[in-house]
Image 1: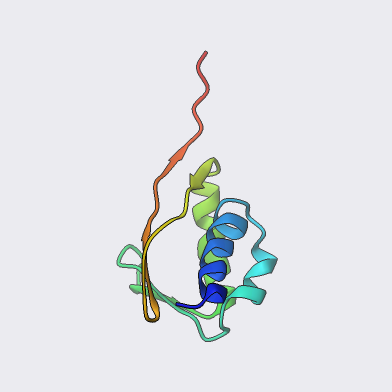
Image 2: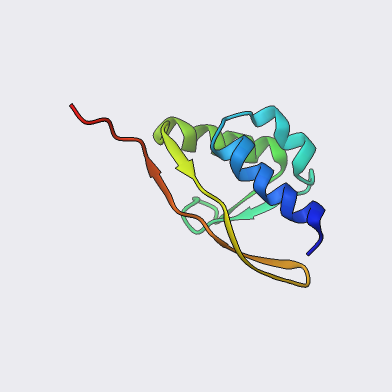
Length: 92
């Protein structure tokens, strides 16, 4: 896995998922993206604009979500990620 690909994965989570800067998706994603997710009605979403819509819905449902990227293994063209996540909770 090239350093560039590792950087793109980090950017995706740190700049887009954790901070909703969706305009940066055009820099990071291939316009032909197919995002597979069994929780989606069709099981997948195609294209950057449709993916932006999914992320906007996700961010509105979980506005305080924060995902920490931990890369555990790099092999050829694959990464193994551990993605701990949660929301900030303030004590009263």
